[in-house]
Image (cartoon, rainbow, N blue to C red; front, side, top):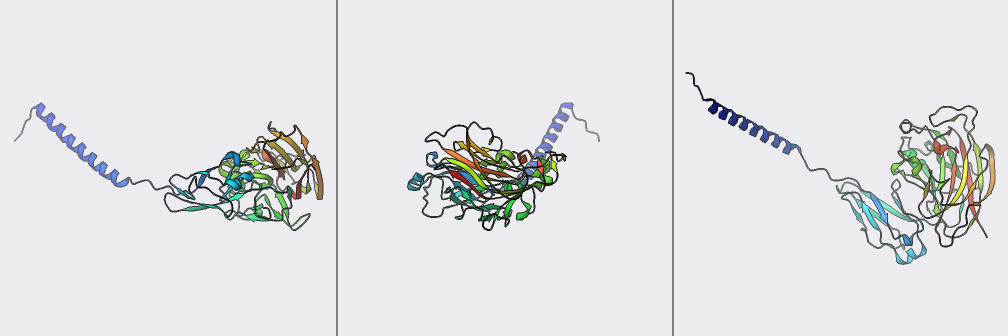
Length: 370
């Protein structure tokens, strides 16, 4: 038997049929999605991102050394009497102890423990108060980064005043051993047991992707901010430590230097007829915000400089004593910073130099006016 329906009845039936099908499909998709979507995992990071203290109690900007889990403070004498109540920010969802705003005093070692939101990781930061006593540096004491195994000089009491490009080189995939880095200690000293050795090394495959074909050995008074080192390496080198008293008159020390065989440009092309040379200089500038490799030679804040005039080959240790040239006189009551900079390739900040160039420095000193 054939059954015939009116057109209006057929259309109504078709609409109901497809509505039911679509409803069922929607329910299935909804159930499937709800079974797949889970709560986002909690943040596993446990970093102190900022550590802010009263600037009237400091002689320099606070530096958070993430690579070595240290918070470096540069304090005036009054900070020891009053203590500090830092404002701290940490990774999203993490907690910190002591808490932000809690008062700290310096009659005992201070550490901060950060626990991630996921509770799966913790990080302990050591607070170090950086004080520059005499400006005499013999490079007899060294420490080593536990994770990446690069070396850095420290003072006899463990205070860290010097930095280098080693933390940035560590990001490029070099082997984790001291001799794989451009700065390390050496027993080839002028006095004592050890000196600082700076060697220009070939870049890695990873660094070449960022246009860095070589790593010049570097050493400087200041800090290295590794957070953005591969993208803006020149801004990662932050020069200077606070001067609390005295007016520098001479930059003195000992060095020996052997240039590498082939000088190359930033693209790695060998440039015949050019011989590498080293750099050794000291700069005094005003303010507490550190200068970097983009402005250490031309900032209007510079007060005085002392440059080694000839960075050519020196087979044996050579003594130098360079008077500071003052562009202007320091103003009473102003804050000042001083840096000493050494490099195994003078143009290393432009990624030009000779692989194998070697500079050794010992007994560097800043002599103050009587």
